[in-house]
Length: 628
Image (cartoon, rainbow, N blue to C red):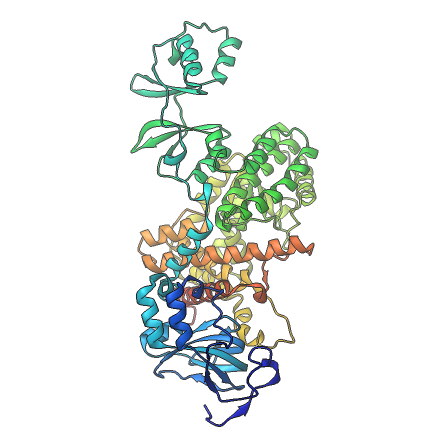
């Protein structure tokens, strides 16, 4: 850095007006503008720590193309951008990140002693320069400040979760269920059951009978009257013993999902496998506005296709409500998977004649099949038919189904992967033959179609048809190295979007959004899908696949945790972009993320997430030998 005096560019006069001529480095004095503590992690500093930083911080001006940090250079300062832009270059000269106002660099290098990368001024910049000794002292006094920079990726995102999740989404069943359950013996009379319900103001009673636990609810009395039962009947005669349960240490959110999936209003609560109480729907609603559960109830009672229109609109409103309540994208995707499945099942049941419904298997694929889609997206579905099904009837119903979904807000698939396309609507033998052909011949189109199919899930009809197709196709997937290599290669499909992205966004005259799917979500989804195929992992959800691969020691446990948290965050960013489109009344483009709209913390976490994705892509390249 040159040592002579020079004039500060006019574009910085609004920041430090009292300096007409300044040196490259100058220290703040008493009444000069203070350090900005209004963003992470500096907002976490107490009064003493802020004063310590304030007394030691300098402001430095750097000109265009000036090198701030060289590779292997000893690091003595932490920098925070006030104005301008700094680019981080790797050893190949590729731009790895761009730092703008309120961004901090290079914290890890400060502790490690040197940086592996070069930091160069992209646009004339003013930066705060904080001495290493000050940073170390603050970290000693404030672990949370240090954790912001030095925690693992998974720990960073976990801390984010703790700040955002509230109520239902951090509540455990043990905190919500009715601990004073009413118990009776199976030989007690129905009259006694009614008396105990009234006495305890309870809607349910548990009974012991022949080493089993049964449940009696208010609805039981309706069945008793309709079937001419007697108040003197033993309780076990009218009790339900096939109970749906949830562990006391599970989340209330998962209880809500199970209630909607099973169309029940209560679950029995277990502790180490033993029934200890009942969790009622009203208990769950005490933790959550009942918005999403009302959608499920409306779906259950819908009787016409017109009813489904209003319900589909209400589902989008549910997303906004729940997101504002702190629910993150992966949990929202789980909830929407349940609601979408109910909607699709109800629609197919209304459209398909009863005989066709019984002789068909309606499946969804892609992100909907994996349970990783929040906002309505393109239709990705298929129909597997019985050999005896009426194909003309199936065609009419399929066309009507695809048309209805479009009306409900699910756009037609650009690749025509829909039941309305005869290719994705076949009798079982033909469907098996088609998928088997994809597995045997590793062409680009076949690998793409196979990848789409491997994420499939049944939403209506006979699930045995999909099971049979899966069993058939897996006999051709017995560790065929060539096929697996061809299958995994799609992880590089969008490398062109990633390369040079940060260089392009430096051109401020050209607004360029980041495609979250291409640069982040897809490489992880497909790389994990390839590893799962190789290791015969049957799960379809990406997070469940990651967990299984870690259990099989295919992935390092810590890296698997980092990868899962990075993927969750990228899903959050995708949802943020989609909701911004809805708010502004724009055409939905949920993958296009406006980098400029992100906060400092969001940009930092996005950079961390993309670095994890890059590491994972390199792991996939080496594992499947894609460079050979």
